[in-house]
Structures are given as C-alpha cells and as structure tokens.
Image (tube, rainbow, N blue to C red; front, side, top):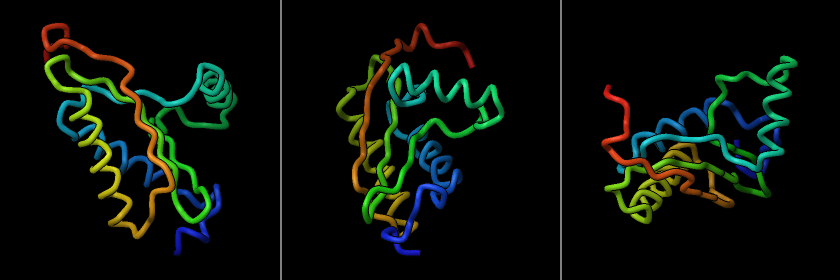
Length: 124
C-alpha cells in the first residue's frame, strides 16, 4: 500500500508498537512516555476507561498526513547521555522502521521530557 493511500483507520497499531520498540532500543533512551498535551492525554485516558482505547496501546503516536506518516514520541534519557545524541539515534531508528515498511515520514516530533540519573534508576 502506498503511503498516499493511508487513512487514519489504516495506520496499524503494530507500526506504532514497532516504532516504540525501536525507540526503546536507541542508545541513551531510559523510557518512553505518551506524547501529547495534558488535555489529549486526559481524553485518551477517558476513552480507555470507556473501552474506546486499550491502555496497553503503544506510546508512540502515529498518523497518516498527506503522503507520509507523522510520528510523535516523548522520551526519558539517562543523565549521562547527551540528549541531542539520543534524539539523533531515535530519529534514525524511526526512519529505519518507516523505510523497511516503504513509508515516508511527513514529520517526526521528538521531545525529551525527563532526564534520570543512573543512580536513581530502579535496580533491574
């Protein structure tokens, strides 16, 4: 399917899940957070409570835009990682996933929302 033929209902949850997996595997990334404003996150939570959305849906936002895909993701990084380096790695990972599916990015919006020290990270 050509990216130009995509409609909102056609964007599979598995694409967002694959993107989230790639983002989490990127160097310097500590965690992934749901993107969007407080209001959009409250609306998502309300929809999930009413059975409209699953709480275990990927945290990466994916939407068709024109002949491409818009991706939005918020990440947490380790304090010893340079945020700019982590963002470059995440961007490259997203590009790679889209390329393997024959999709073109319309926009990729990345936000660092949290920096956590390695000492404060839970033991795992």
